[in-house]
Amino acid sequence: MPKMKTKSGAKKRFRVTASGRVKVGVSGKRHNLRKRTQKMKRKARGTTILQPGDTSLVMKYMPYHRS
Image (tube, rainbow, N blue to C red):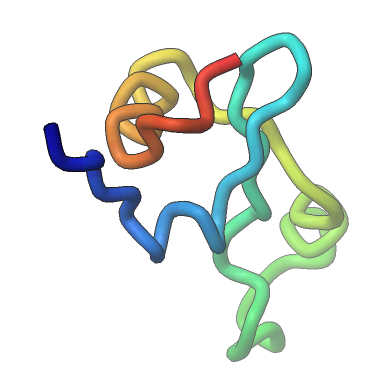
């Protein structure tokens, strides 16, 4: 039986926590930051946890990262 493929873009962008949730960096903070409000830039620091619907999609991309 062949191995299942992991999406290489997904393994670079997402991490799975010990409780099985998916951690991801906040989007929209790479460039054109002069347009963004200070509040948005403050909230975009660090990482965030994906919503359950998006989590199921990401976990299909990474079949060997089940926790």
